[in-house]
Length: 140
Image 1 (cartoon, helix red, strand yellow):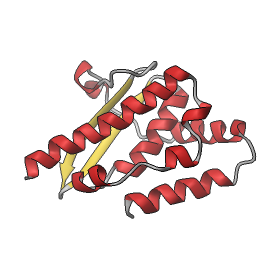
Image 2: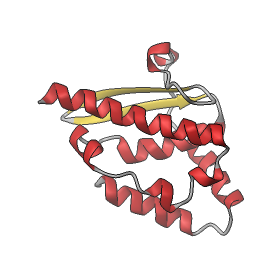
Image 3: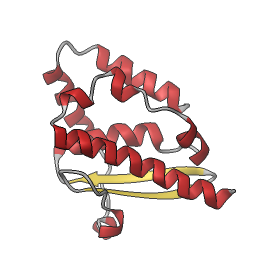
Image 4: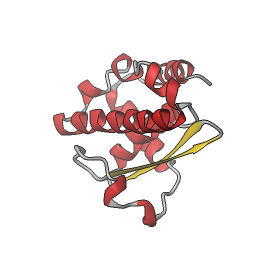
């Protein structure tokens, strides 16, 4: 699936919920389904700066696509990073860099987070894009 298709799918999923408490519950469930990240990758090098909670992000390039793994120490944060993994993982660095991330605004995610969590969300997105930029420059 393309990044745009995945984002539209997320928007559709969030549209079925009547209120933000249900959306929070859904995000928390997504966090619980996040695959386990080995402790050996929970290092300072993989830690995303700017997050209220600890969030680790690691990536590898496989067959021209970035495969991200992430974990966090707070359940809501894990859910947010699970959404970002869904959008960005298994995409080429070029696609990650060229596609606008519109689902966050469409579902009003930032507006329903505390200011520190909203800042953390921005930091997470920047880190995904930074990894894509690094790998894109290696491929060029």
